[in-house]
Image (cartoon, rainbow, N blue to C red):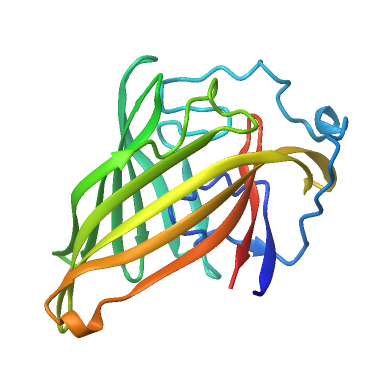
Length: 237
């Protein structure tokens, strides 16, 4: 199994949803250690416990605030923005929209003290909707209080997608574990991060062409820094 290491730039507070693609990677590898570093303050990071969330969707390990926008892709043509947030510190709904030359990706979430739940995933190509959500279950990302070493969670979403040659219904399932601490490079220094190991499995359930049904999975390790979010990931190929 081939493993690649990708370090996200400081500006890439981008929201990594299911697929780790879309963020602008550097070739600098992530270096893991067994003991936490004490250099986090030197990199200008918030001190533990100092982050002040603006809503239930604004997790110190998964920041999401109204108006947040990132540009990725080699030419900056992929733009991800938090286009709406409504609610308070207890219950919130949020919409995150990604526009690219391939179309528009719209994701909707509900957030509470239990964490972040991904409720809708829709894709549009020009004026046509090509993918919609049929069902979902589980928690997509836990609350800050639950985001500790050893924490585990599972999420799945079932979608219907129209293809040029027909249609397919698929389930995308994610199983994650906060596996431990690592030292990662951020803004030229090594800082503490929590490493989250995830298995993303995609299973085709129904299709207009039953012979074309497929199953596959990917393995990821994401690295989260308090007050910043995900700063890098390790992915299998």
